[in-house]
Image (cartoon, rainbow over all chains, first blue to last red; front, side, top):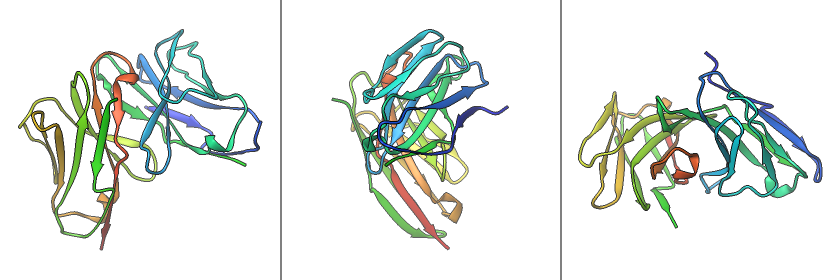
Length: 114
Length: 113
């Protein structure tokens, strides 16, 4: 049981480039979300999804795009990378049976934008 | 605006010490408070508290919630170097989306041998 799998683990981009962070879960969880973690700021919600085909914005959505075509996958797209998007990104999932509030996190993706 | 404040921001202790980490909150429609431990990588779930005064315990870790004073503490007794991590507190407002969860900025605990 892999849980939540994120790729890549590390990425360096130049300003203006685009990329996609991949996230997949094999727990049949309904809820998936993306967070960014910056020093001293805790985890901030970027986008989330309550099921396939349904997504919504979190606290810091600007510059990011998501889609949820299947229950398992929830990719995060950076449209035109900026240095302010240098951060560690975590994907998380949770389910109705285990509790929507009890998140299982992926291992994180460290992104540097030059 | 909902707030979750953790203190101290960082703490350095020696093996065998007991530590207390604090989490205070101002959240509308409080439903539960959660503690996570974050070592090098992903945060992992420790406890969920919903009722005042009921201690949750797992080995050397324990936590309690005070809904009247709006805070929770996480105690770790007989600390070990493996307890070194960032401890995150989060408060849940209910409902079925991640938007209902607010995280604090964490306490960095370092346990020296």
